[in-house]
Image (cartoon, rainbow, N blue to C red; front, side, top):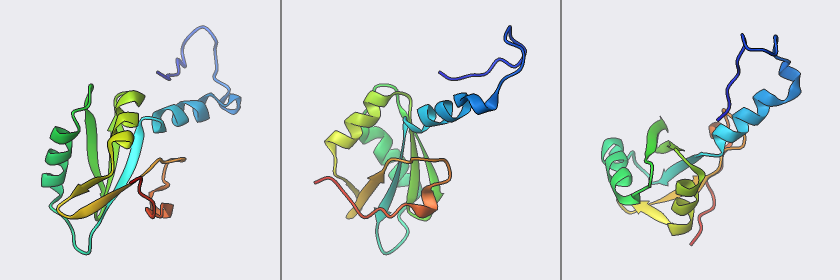
Length: 118
């Protein structure tokens, strides 16, 4: 896990060293963003409860509403995330769940959600 000890033995932290960027990439490595492709808003609470129970991850997954029918999935480990992708495609209430891997923080508005593994 990434962390910075600002009062540790090394003195100051050089942010240009790339450590902060690597830590951010590692955190994004446990995330997916998904959009339910539906013409109307789905019942978000029902989707979150249904998905959490159905996916049966080893260490759990935190699901947050990003905007509309778009959700952020934060996994505790990369294996759970990989397994979810391999077991798809997923749907809820007749709506296909399109999943994307975020590359940078704040990418959700630029994501197209135009691919699904069938």
